[in-house]
Length: 494
Image (cartoon, rainbow, N blue to C red; front, top):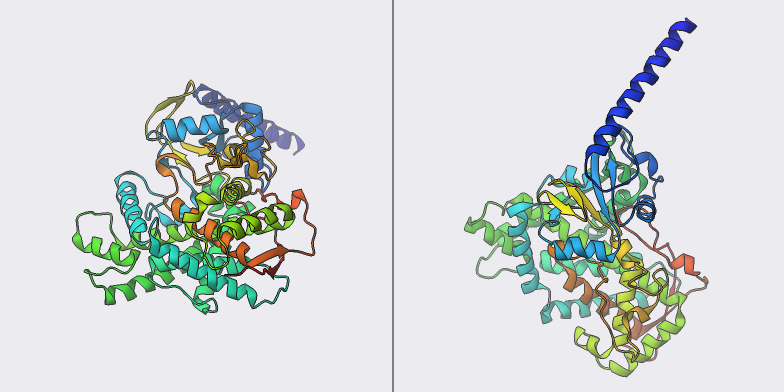
């Protein structure tokens, strides 16, 4: 019996060695960038610290350089790190790197529909349409700026009602920010106490949390295995389905009241385009899933940026004081902050940029893919290969920012105190896949922050450290720590 057991064990070891040797030889024959040697079946998952995908990828960059390869299962993934390398791919060779790479946490639901997770002509048609509609109903036009100002005013009143109590501002911010997308997409805002609206936002937050957590990271790295394993990652699909049901109901309501001569919002414009039948891509499924993409881009990310800003300003009261001085001097008592004021407020402009750089909301970027076989820095990357351009490595590149891991508005100020641009500022990505709502997001961040600071001083009984204000790096999305602060009314008010 012992001899049989020893023979079986020996045979298993020999077979394992043969499999590993064959895999290793096949892996090394590819002219891909260097990286940690993968194991059969699981790839490099054992090299990645549990729940710390971003940190692990950054550590690999230190060891293997600005271009390296890791394996999610048997699939190679090319990782790009540092401003110069990411710029060369996304900006200088934008067409080649403009594909959307696989992201199983979303792909199992979106299945090639929508706006963010599609490729080819479908992506080009839908992106062109969405940019046009957002421009007409949102970006760069006075009406949406007025909506943001009005919503900010309502947010101020909601905060005032707390009477200087210490609160977690997350829900207030999420509701205020989401209402801007709601007015563009649905044609109306929701009251903060609307039950359906609050359930909708709860679903968005839960999805972001599950995707960024350890189980969501495992699903992205080993989808063929994780789809058979129970766990929190199973909630992602369920919650996405609940979201789509809510949007389907809104679309059906629009169909019954549609006036093709007077479109009210994004849904109306899409339905009118659908009736024209000049493109096969304007299906109801692309509409509902495209709206979900817009909400993901325009709710959690902006809310998280503002949450980070509040925490940072409590930590650095001297920065907050300089912002108050500039707001009082430029805005005054009777004027509502607008984007036109930005050019006269270099310090506010620098702080908002630095908040976005430092908070690093989407550290991994959405995955890209090369659209053709390409030679990149001496390596051959086959068509369709997934590419991760690490935005965190760009926003914290020591060659581009003097104190990359510290909050420092001087990164965006020259010696005369004037605002200065930095090409490594890529929180919205770059190239053809740059976030379609960038202008809208920047408008919201500036106006919300300016109006809140015009009305309040932010304080806390907690003394936050530099470590406390750093983004919590996990997976898909970063977020600040949970906190409570007080909003103390100022003499100069809205």
